[in-house]
Image (cartoon, rainbow, N blue to C red):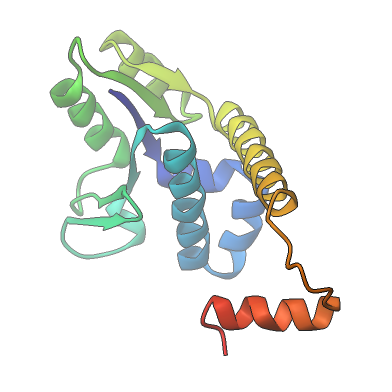
Length: 169
């Protein structure tokens, strides 16, 4: 199984779109990262785990599941790097290939010495952009291959029928 461990705040600080969003609302930046990693998971089939440091979200350790992506907020005195290192140790096996997405150079060497592979924030961003383009192409192809009505309809009427069909009244 392929597993991607993501250092959440490191990626937010490295991706321009998330970095700009973080300035106004950190929670929205986290949500967008989770959304993008959900797309990544669906497209690649990887198990994705995002780890956030507790120092930016006070409270006890918390685990959540969102769209097949696991989200971990560390304990208050535990860093995301420490949790990622523990996860690598417990999850690494002959059957699992673990990638860690972070641009923290020290963390990259630490996890690499434990047997995991690294992905820099930049590499993950480029891969995510490629995935988003692939998704757009698939959607466009599906829409083009969609059977059209045998009755000629204006675009407005067809759009209204499509809204009704999807339950958007």
